[in-house]
Length: 123
Length: 108
Image (tube, chains in turn cyan, green):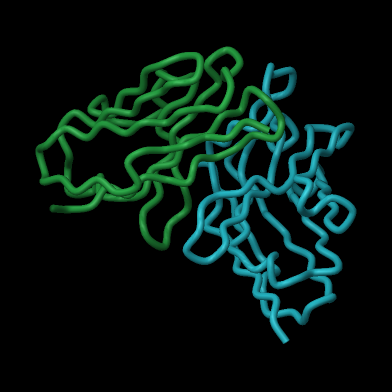
């Protein structure tokens, strides 16, 4: 059974930093792209960042480019999101999501999602 | 960036009725790479349909997707109590993948 478990969310002050983690199990982690998708309170879904199977490619939404860094450790079956220079607009539930297998014609279809971790940016 | 517009915003129906949800793209979606997700309150989204019309694993056949180009439809042929939720379409043919704003299916 595929499982994605996020951690690392919490309350942080504007301008602060936070590192999210996602522990994956139930599939061959190194075979799939991975992504972070967020959802502000009461709002819709917003793709944040994706990473390829060997970390050769990393893509970011314009809203987080230069502030967030996605990474993965295939030996630990883990995905990470380093978030710096946080603002109130970054307040959201952050979901870890599984992307397609390597060599897919697309990279942002998400077939499994974690339960999410809440990030609140407030003074 | 492709903009997706979902309609209606809210659909009020009774159990057993048919639900028809629309998703319109601002430009043609490459290879009909259009997905639908279901999200219940307090839960993560769940993939229902990909490639416009292919059901994801374990999804009941009362859920069906159709469409191509810029116009897509998700049909729920007979609403079950567990189907009342918010539904999002997403295009993943062009980067960034974008989501619609959602359609809430509520009990009438």
